[in-house]
Image 1 (cartoon, helix red, strand yellow):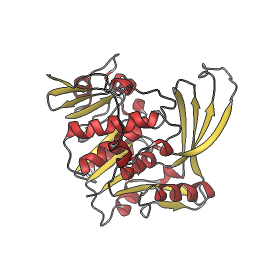
Image 2: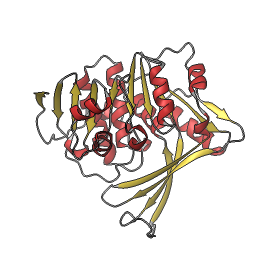
Image 3: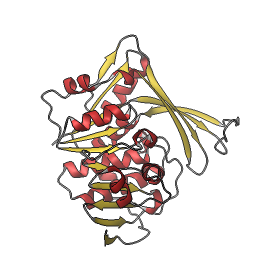
Length: 304
């Protein structure tokens, strides 16, 4: 059983501020830290830490940042042997403004990661035959949907982020999509969009809308289940969605049912927001198994 995450590795540049800036406004940065990131890289690490055999497929530059990124993922248990190193191209980067309450604003430059295409991905996956593929929109929505259509794995999970790139597109060939609340609203074109509304708008049979402290709403072929959140004191929400997706994929890869896998994702995500940065904030399977938490509610199910 194998999980593959396809997309970006980039170093994250954290800018700690007292509050997030308004458009056109400059704010003082109190602290600066560089860490490892990129949605696919984060999801690969979360999946590997959760116990799945996990591969990262993407591209980095032949520079120090690229070498350090591949080494970091390997140290977390991710197989990076299928990643490409591109001569003459710089590894990308993300800038993250982080406020004291854990809210953040993120901008990402793909750099060498923009060089991957369907041909390079299929070449990287030759003889691998992954069971689950994790895709995101960081390397363009067009490429993500092209890979979905190519059926690169029996189960394809798409994190439609950034969501504006997927608005109006048919996602029906995706097995599962996992927007957060804001992304769900953008995909549907209305506020407080339900998982069933996202399914109607995108044509996807299985939709999981992650709602932070409020847990997740799972729509599975006509039935909606609301899974409870976990009451924690957040300090950094960046990468929480990636923690959810990686843990979700690992649990499904281990044979878990959808609701149990989504619950595993909620636990992994809640753990991550109590710690700084992305990869360093992710838990191992053993840490999550021994973590005592309080859920905010009981799961509820309604037919839709």
